[in-house]
Length: 376
Image (cartoon, rainbow, N blue to C red):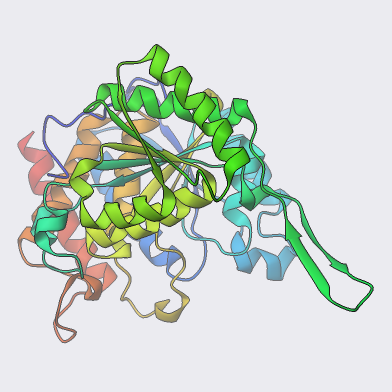
């Protein structure tokens, strides 16, 4: 199950305890494409929940991000937005982000050292027949992908060289430091020790031998220091196994690019990318929450976007950054109840002639939220 009234995450990033007298400071970056639609849905849910459970929220809206920001400022993460984010973190708040294109997410992660990304892969059982993956492959799956977030190929130096014969050489540097590997392994090991004790490390031993050797060196330390069941897989095999035998996995940890690939592939287990979400975490409790589906420019403004991924990232934020476990559980339970009642956005139905708009689906979630919250 994705939810339970007794649900408590195995690993909480921030040590903040709930305090109904102090507002939760939330910096909102609506983003572009379908971002404003799904983010506004999540804010409506949050406002209703805060009213019912009588806690305070301080929602602040930041500047442009992504391609919209590039058109306005020539940067996908302009200084005005950086300053806004810094102010949110200075007040021990969290960032709630819609999708932003260009280099936005990479610049955000690098600027605040958001080195760790959690991507839960936990299918909603009421939606076990909507995607291309068979029910037997996804039923009961509970995986956490832990991705190293600020190093590797995505942050390597690159360029072009025109050679004497007129040919053009394009290059991009791939590098990792042992300290970067150790800290992401430590997080994933701590998470696995609080879950089912299994940790899969994904690399490419023969294809990228030098960097893989450094990862393997760090893994040997874990063998000495923990009692975890450690498994080492190559990226190509792990992508196959993630769909063919997902139940073998508990926690998966890997490098930046490989984590990107695995997380997107893993959304097949959920049935739709509209159900995927994640959190980006760094020192001193800094965190930014997002969906996993991107801006979906082709359906922007059409009311077709699935808000569930954004709602689940909201649930994750309430848990991880603010310690409001019951509030987070109410959101998850409301989503499950909504889909159990048969309500769907277009990506969650096999027929294209009967589906709800983003707003209509959110309305049902809010109705169920009010019912469930009042029972507690």
